[in-house]
Image (cartoon, rainbow, N blue to C red):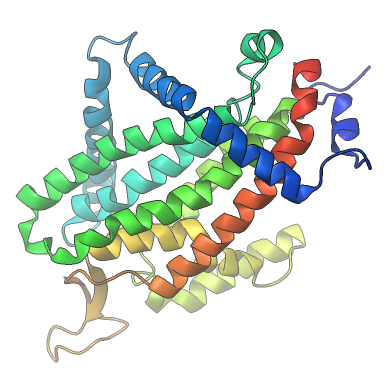
Amino acid sequence: MPSMGVVNEAPAAFRSSNDRPGPVALIRNAVTDVWSRRRLIRYMVRADVKKRGVNTVLGNVWWVLDPLITMLIYVLVMTVIFQRSTPDFPLFLLSAMVPFKWFTATVGSSTNAVSGKQSLITQILFPKIILPVTLSLSQIVSFLFGLGVLLFVWFFAYHDHVTWQVVWIPLIAVVQFTFVLGWTFILSAVTVFYRDVGIVIGHFMRLLFWISPILWSFMEVAGRGARLQAGLEGIERSFGLPTGILFGFISLNPISQLIESYRKVIYGELDRIDLVTGLPSEDGTLVWTDAVPPDFEMLAIVFTSGIAIIIIGTIIFKRVEPAFAKVL
C-alpha cells in the first residue's frame, strides 16, 4: 500500500524514454500551448478574479482593505509592544509586505493549481500548463490592488519620500514575475504526485517571512552582523549544517533582493548617522535617506535565475503532464 501523500506513478512519469520529446521540443510545445490558448487564459484569469469576492459581503473591496489591515496590525505590534523606532515605519513595512504577499500568494496557491482541478483535468483534454500560467497572471491583479494602496499611502501620507525613482517599480515587478513563474510550474507539477509538498511550502513561507527584510532591513542589523552570524553558526552546528550557509541564504536569497529593490525606490534607504558629527556610524541613529535606484546588477542576477527556473520548470511540467489524468 502506498504511503499517504505519495503516488506510485510519479517515478514512472519522471523516467526518461527514447520516444519522448527532448527539452527543446518540450519548451517549444509549452510556448505553443500557451500562445494558442491565450484567449482561454484571458477568460480564466477574469473568472478567477471575479470568483474571489463572490462569497464575501465586501467583495473585491477586501483587496484594498487586506493590505491596510495587515499593515496596521504589524505597525501596532512593532511600534507599541516592541517599541520600534524606524522612521515612517508604516511605509517601511508596506513597501515590503505588498511584494512579499504577491510572492507567497502565488507560490502557495501553485501547489493546488493542478491537483485542485481534478474534475477538469480528467474530463477535458487541454494543455495543463495554462493552469499555472492563469494562476500567476490572476495574482498580478491582487498585487496591483495592493500596489495601488501602497502608492496612495506613499503619495498622500509620506510625500517627503516621493521621488521619480518610483518609475523603476514596473521593472522590479517584471523581474519578480519571471522569478515566480518558474516555481509555479515546478510546484504545481510535483504536488500532483507528492501532496506533502504543499504542507512543506506553507512552513517554508513562514520561515521566509522572518528571514527576509520585511520587519527589518540589512542596515539595521549591520552593526550587529558579528553577533547575528555567531547565532546562526550555533544553529548550523546544532543541525549539522555547513558553517555560513544560513547567513549566506539570508543575505543572498532573491526575495530579499526584490524587497530591498522595492523599498529603495519607494521608501528610500536607512542609514545610521551620528547626530553630533553627521557622519555614518554603526552605533548612530537610524535615519532614512532619499529614494535611490535599485541594484540593477542584483536584479539582473535574479532575472537570469528566473529565466533558468522557467526553463527547468517548463521541462519538468511538460515531462510529467501526461501522467496527471491517471494520477488524479
